[in-house]
Image: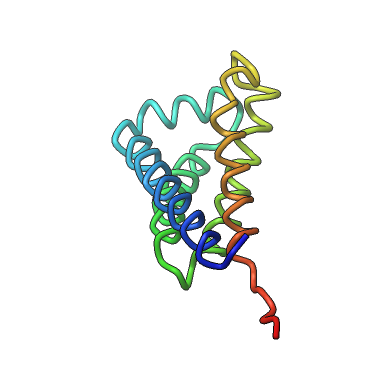
Length: 122
């Protein structure tokens, strides 16, 4: 893949996933009582709801800032790995409802891969 194709692909993914995570985090904050109820119903302390919502908003912003892209993607991968595990083990509906979390996890992995440091070739 050429450097320009890699860059365009990465920016498109970063934009889409960045907006998706910002929207998801804002939605969690907007319905905080519902979010807290959902997190506590699956056995997680309420503080985790705040951490996840804040992490999604900040991580989504970080995906759009070149200096923070890889770190933001890796941090969001931790959140999404947790979401996949929760869907597979505790959330009603199982992995059928966890497919979006899995897709986001894979997309973040692609961003990390596309934004890896590349050695210049002579």
